[in-house]
Amino acid sequence: MRLTVNPDLCTLCGACLLTCPADMIREKAGRIKIGRVMCIDCGHCVALCPEGAISVEEGEPGEFCAAPPPGVEADALRALVVRRRTIRQYQPRPVPRELLKQMLDAARWAPTAANCQCQAFTVLTDPERRDALAARVTDFYRTYADIVADQEHTAERLAGLGLDPAFGMHPHMQAAVPAFVKHVDAGRDRLFFGAPVVIVVHADVNEVLPESAGAFATLILALMAESLGLGTCITAYASEALRALPELRADLGLPEAHQVHYVLTVGHPAEEYRLIPPRRPAQVSWV
Ligand SMILES: Cc1cc2nc3c(=O)[nH]c(=O)nc-3n(C[C@H](O)[C@H](O)[C@H](O)COP(=O)(O)O)c2cc1C
Ligand code: SF4
Ligand code: SF4
Image (cartoon, rainbow, N blue to C red):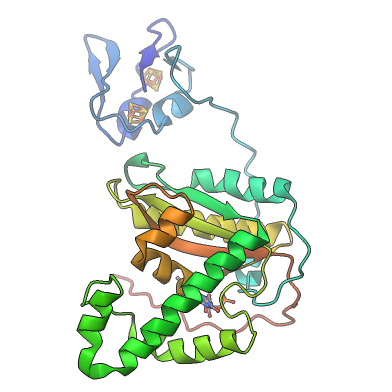
């Protein structure tokens, strides 16, 4: 981000120097100088300067806007967080695109390492595309369950499937695969739960800590959905299969350098939780 400081407005208060995460701001001979080499385009110096002395040079992308008033009560935010439940039954009616856009827009503000903003989303709303993906993911698990059961030849058979012979799921997931396949074969959608929308969250592997960008963006999507009266389920079955199989990612049009981090189903819930289930006490050490 190319930035200019207006010396007539600057009072040398030093706020921008202290906030810059990249240490790109210096005071020299009574003037504020901003470098660009390590600038992560966070915009904090512009957003913080009490005099409005720092401006973005013409031609740079992005617009600053006024911060909304600090209106979200802690109780309201907590209520949103504890109300959100994973939804595993959906109404078949479509989700208005406007609501999806609101969710995706908010997810742009997820914190990301070095402000890389690398989270990307592929949104499946076409039932045929969704069902085709579901069928291929289920096929993958059908074969995977068979391979894991054949303990003597697991490594070669994994390689035959195009997977790293060391490919292994967490034992909890692995143990659940046969039941997952059985349910799907019996006509029960244990993958997308009949949700009309599936969002694949992915990011370029060369970015800074891309997995965390995906995680935080996914949480924002889920909380925004809750606030809009929609339900979500993060489904590891889908994300694990997409992570393992490049051809599935290619079919969805993901760039080659992108890895999938999360898959989220979205829809109008067809189940309503009456109670908030308990959680373990927070594991906290005060030191
Ligand atoms: C990374 C991740 C993967 C998950 N994968 C699945 C899944 O494959 N299938 C499923 O039904 N739920 C899945 N869940 C939902 C969890 O089971 C759920 O979040 C947890 O039981 C707590 O319930 P709650 O979300 O209603 O609070 C996943 C959640 C996360 C965070
Ligand atoms: S925050 Fe603004 S006023 Fe303060 S030193 Fe930086 S440019 Fe000058
Ligand atoms: S945009 Fe962020 S990183 Fe760049 S100079 Fe301003 S505060 Fe520093």
